[in-house]
Length: 374
Image (tube, rainbow, N blue to C red; front, side, top):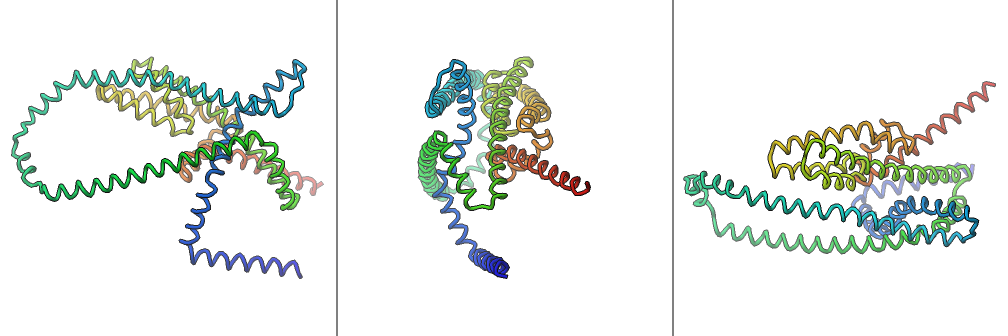
């Protein structure tokens, strides 16, 4: 009887709280926004720690194998700190390599555009001269211009421009500060991940029922494994797509092949849609040369992207997280619709966790039915 009363009391309190929240929804949303702003560096640090932990764990495992074969006993702290330093060195090397390949290509692209404009400029001037600037429609347009109103519009536009500049600068400063705190928090989390995991496990076991605690720990372990597999598969897929794009541009004699290949590999970290940014860049650059070349560039890029999205990506990334190609595509689409780029990155391992949990639950239910039948 006492247990039922507690349940009824909890339901009443929850109902009253929900009613109060719905009647004061704007205040609740403002409070939630302020709370998210406070804990945002922690969220950013946790996300960065997830990404850093994947290569760091792989490097740590390899270091342990090497030194165990040599029968050298080193402390866990040494392995952790060394793998952390090597991870950041590898990230710095990859970034340096990308910029080393990208900057010369950008410089040559800008020079090529300059020479293209220089050679086409007489044609453009001749075309403007053929339009006859003294035409009647131009005189009528100039006669209808209100200079006083134009000055007022320019002044109000300048005020809006300066306000937007100040807002952009303050937002950029806030992003930099949040990123700096997030990076510091991620360093603490990655270096002390065993301590953090141990305390989190204690809290889960202390405040949850044993069955629920075991389920929560199982879900977290499954997500960690799936995310690590997904990130490694995504990086592999990005390299494959960059090489394919470079080969396709080279075979069909399209310009800026190496630039588009490197740019595609960098942008392809974002599932499915990231590479379309480099596609837009390639089409714009080809359009500066000729419209026919831009059309050919668009066709080649779309075909390579379609083949990669339908056949390579689901098998490389989906296979790494244990998902069929259809589920991988659905997870990326739903995540992108709900949360944008971050959703596309995290929904694929989340889908893998959900599928694995459903499979385990279905197998447990079937085994219990078989045992009852026996």
